[in-house]
Length: 421
Image (cartoon, rainbow, N blue to C red):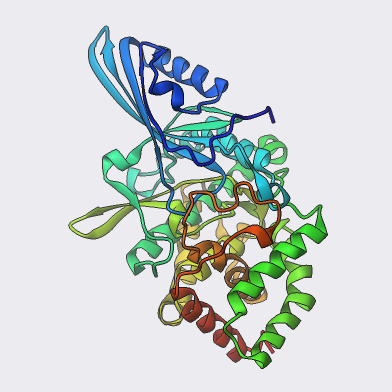
């Protein structure tokens, strides 16, 4: 990856007129490739005169791999006035400790794949069999994507929003999200059968963005996450959790992330949680959701996405009341969606195989809760807390009080199931 200008904590606003910069705009730390992409977008959209305004926006702790901007292009075309709204994610300049946890370059290449290739392929596949508008899998429109930046339609301007990463998700939101997940997975099964060469070359070969090569560095990071999430437990519970860490997590978590578990595999979202799903509400009811942030794509078990979703965005009461129903909803939606493509679920993912994988993957929920909770519940006092930090011990983890109750519920749940013993 090319050398990148530092922009970790700059919060700036600027104005570009007809491609030229003024003093205020020069403060915006756009990479040369990003500036060129903006010029490309202006040309492709047919502007004869224009002005561009942009502002750095906060992810509120939901994104650590990029600086996020709202960009507006206003001007004239030969057909009259025109205005477009763009959400821009530019690669972070100072990876710090992140480089030992994730491969940032792989993250961006995965997202480029989605927005430059899969968006059109998925649309064509669904067009060919006349999938109704309300039953389609949808991807946000892309204006341009390069290795260092993603330019998407800013659907917040259409009424979409993200929910708070620390909240327990509403049931309707969960149902809509699970339905979209089933369609995402379903389309990769369709690719496998309809375009096998592409599937083998681009999907089956997906590499996880999580870095396990530096096993000592990764284990140190995991140990730190477990310490944060378990520091309020009594000694006996901590010992059980530490045993789980040493004898199960270190061995099996990489297998989940590398796609080495489960009887069936597909392209998985990899970071399928509440803050990576945008929702549109009408009359205070969730009506439509769109998945975003495909930086952690990997080829693996569909159940990894399912459990990740539940154990990063629900509490015990929610799971007790709805987990089995959502499990059935996933399989039913996958079954229905595959029928449009004349594919039989029994040939793709028979219910008995799905149920077995569900049972065998149940421990992943505990792994996710203990490993990811510090990211979900960290109180962000600087936009990128990892920025400039060389080791995980340098990161100031100030946690929201809600994490104690949520993690405690998970631990008690898994003790009752006999998985944590």
